[in-house]
Image 1 (tube, rainbow, N blue to C red):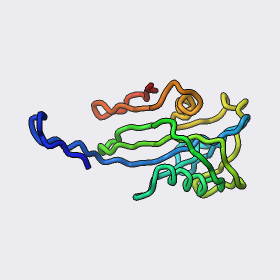
Image 2 (cartoon, one colour):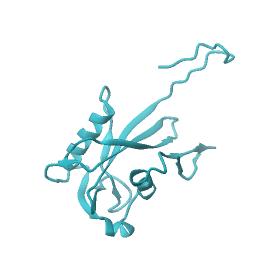
Image 3 (cartoon, rainbow, N blue to C red):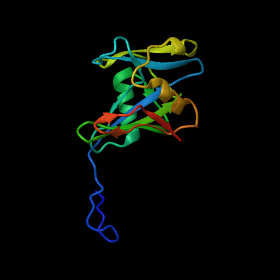
Length: 165
């Protein structure tokens, strides 16, 4: 926890906040990307990239490796952090998705209770039923132009998400 001691701030100011940490990984090869039809969403057959929650005491890297194994059956190697997706929830908790990518993996692909996973040909990307701003996240995963996708929370409403450099 980080607390300012009040020097030059006009008083003691708490700089801590509640945070929920998750991850997502863009797994790809030359012609395909791995997608998941995530169960438990309101979007029928909506596609996302696999990932999940970071457990208490777990490193960020280890969490994405574990989540991908649990959700896809694949072992991933050298996941590279490439950005963030974040917003403030209605209760004030900051929700952060750490974005990773890798083209190094092994194992046999299998679906889990989290959802059906499969390879999507890159030529079919335009017609894919992506949800949760996956198309905007592709800009982070596939280019070096952006590092964050952020939703501002103003007057009790979420503003449209913005890609940030």
